[in-house]
Amino acid sequence: MVKNVGLFFGSFNPIHVGHLIIANTMLEEPDIDEVWFVVSPQSPFKKQKSLAHEFDRYDLVEAAIADHFHMKVTDIEFKMPKPSYTADTLAYLTDQHPNHKFKLIIGGDNLKSFPKWKNSDVILRDYGLLVYPRPNAKKSDLEDHENVRFVEAPMMDISATFIRKSIKNNRSVKYLVPDAVLDRIKGKKLYI
Image (cartoon, rainbow, N blue to C red; front, side):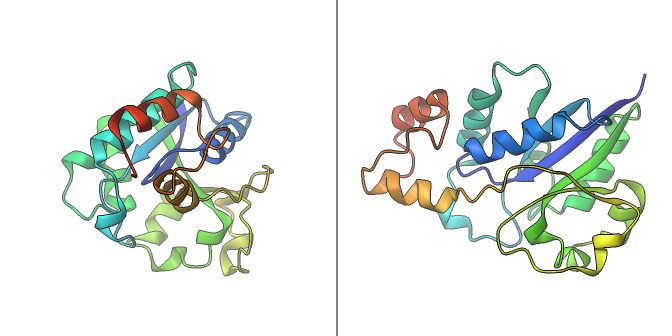
């Protein structure tokens, strides 16, 4: 039996309710059985110094989705060459899970720059994109592509940067991250 999986890549530094709302919305799509959070150890577009350790971020995602049967977290990119590229991860996951059909979940703000991604044409052809709305998303030539589907979802503008800064300044982030995530952030003294 084929399992349809939406892959939600990110640094999740930290995971927050915006990520979870988007993932849950994707699960309402008729052709998505599960959403996998792919924790990226180092994005080619982000500075390493602002990232919490990859195992801590993985642990936060695990805590956030512990009670959701159709959400999973994977550390697949921890074992791959760094920086990791989405196309390479998709190819590896496809080899490892031949009975799974993967789709890439991205924000509308990434659609315009998507053609600059490594092997973006292969990703579009073989996997396709599920695009959720983001504030200030620019118009893209890909909007009418047959393998690009826009998913109606709440417009989320919750920033992990804002959350990290709030924690550092000893301000409350209650309701921005799940309680289990907040407990682990405090317990590990992350982002202070």
